[in-house]
Length: 167
Image (tube, rainbow, N blue to C red; front, side, top):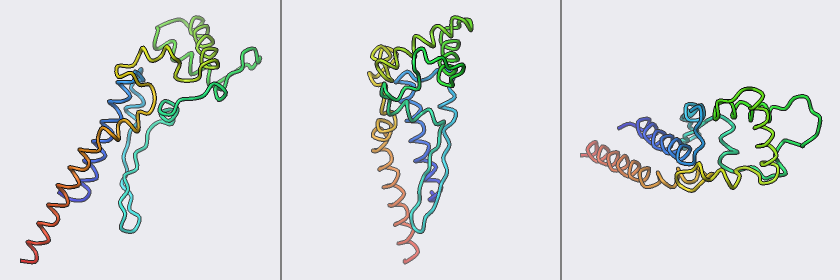
């Protein structure tokens, strides 16, 4: 096994665990977040880094959003809002409703977010593991043993090769 094989194996373990946590927490609708995961391998001197990227909305799904950070003000009179547009898209996809119904649902969700933040208390009912945040840390904790095993196996193999060359 080469170093790049090892890095690829670790990246796959982590990405698979990220996807699993997202699904368990009930964040899957279109699958776009899961499909967005990508790994790049970087080297800084003697240090190798696995950089995993994904759609930016994965971060607020992980950390949550406090009510005061919800970008909505009821009755503001704003003609457009990317936040409301996103909620309307969500409503159409999740519930299969018309544009008019989606707008009504979007404003109801926005008002709820403004009161409770994200995730809302009721959103936990969509979770299969009781969690709606911290999918990154949960996935990394879940894979720690497998990563340790992969590193141990690689290191042992590398040491064997070195000893064979010395013999």
